[in-house]
Structure formats: C-alpha cells, structure tokens
Image 1 (cartoon, rainbow, N blue to C red):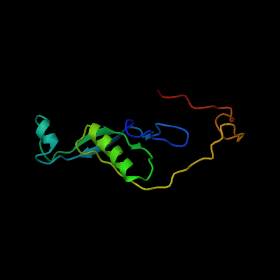
Image 2: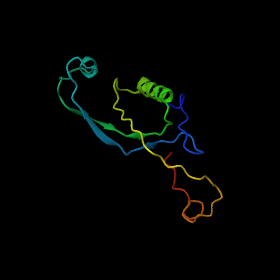
Image 3: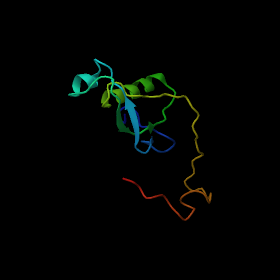
Image 4: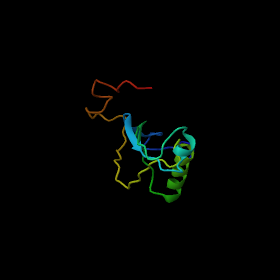
Length: 117
C-alpha cells in the first residue's frame, strides 16, 4: 500500500490503526480456493482464523482509491479479502509543535507511550 499512497494525516505519514488480534470465521463452498488447495478440507465446515482490523484514511479520490484497493488485493493472502469502505469526516488539527496546551504529550509530563516496535 505504501508504494501507491503515503497514508498522510496532517504532517505525519504511514498512519494506520491496527486492532488487537480477533477472530474471523468462514464456511468455504465447493470449488472455493480453500477446498481446492487445503488437503482434506470438507466444504461447508466452519473454520476460524486470527485477524486484525486495519483502518486507514485517504482523500476522496476514485483514482487513489482504485490504486490503494488494487495494492491491498494484490498482496493479501485471501483471494477476496473483506474490505469495508466508508465515507467519513476526519479530524484535522491546527498543527503547532510549540503549543503550550497542557494536555499535549510534550507538556503533560508523561511524554509519549513506549513504542511497540
């Protein structure tokens, strides 16, 4: 995805939200990729797999959306990933890295949380 869009949000790039690991279920039908490539699989049996939810924000531009969707579908391990698109309002701050707002991490005495990676 990053090859086709910077995922810009204000003065930051590569912005995304990734949920905790959850579960998703599916019941592949006869002739599906699962029944074709998974040895011993019986069509109609429900399987549950780990999943995360990824949220990104891009500008409202059909050409950009097409490039992002093609990039996701091209590298996803499912032949048909579940993707929900929603048009929504997003916040945009009046960016001031020298703000004296006491709630900002650089002013509140706590700083940023420890990074995960």
